[in-house]
Each structure stands twice: as structure tokens, then as C-alpha cells.
Length: 121
Image (cartoon, rainbow, N blue to C red; front, side, top):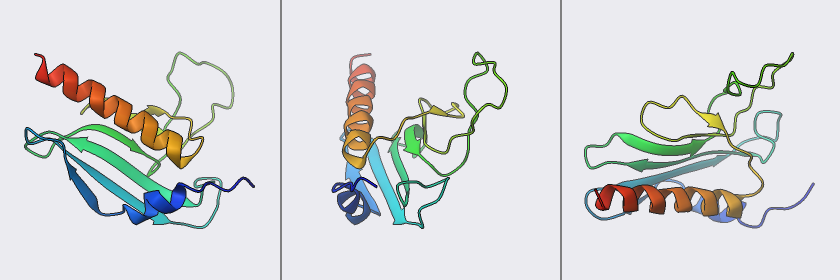
């Protein structure tokens, strides 16, 4: 099994709330779990961006299983735990977890994009 050196950073950030200005904020949660089919990286995580009144507007997590989009019609559809919520009412789309560094890169790129869109309206 490949060792992911950034997993420890993710775990150290558990409980962190990061101010993004304008009332927007990020919450990071991460807890070690046993390695399993649901948590192959051995960590349960949730990275979320919230609007000023607390509503989640972006989230990356592995807290529950989701089905792939219905457009993929094949027998034995795989349920995945790693996924992202692209907006407040999104039930989640699969996210391919490669390692913790890529998770941070992808999440913060989406945060930057969303905040830029919100601030230029």
C-alpha cells in the first residue's frame, strides 16, 4: 500500500474553521478509521464551504455511499463513498480520491472558483 504523507496534515486540521472573508468559511473534519472498502485510505473526511448564514455550498466527503449518475446504465453499478456536493441541493457525485494532497488541491480550487463567481456577481 502506498503511503500518503499528507494524510497526517488532513488529520491535524480536524476541527479547523477557516475564514474566507465576506462571511464565507471552510470547515475541515477528519478522523482516522480502520482501512476498509468504505475507507480505503483509513480516514473519514469532510471539507465544506459555507455561506454567511451557515448553509453548505460545497462539500467533499466520504461519509455516505452514493450511486453514480443515472446516465451510466450498466449492471452492478458501483456505490462509492468518496464524493463531492457541488451546490447546496446536490446529493453528490463521485469523486476519485487519489491522495490527501489532491483532495486539498481539488477542494481549494473549487472554493476559489465559487468565491470568485460569488464576488463578481
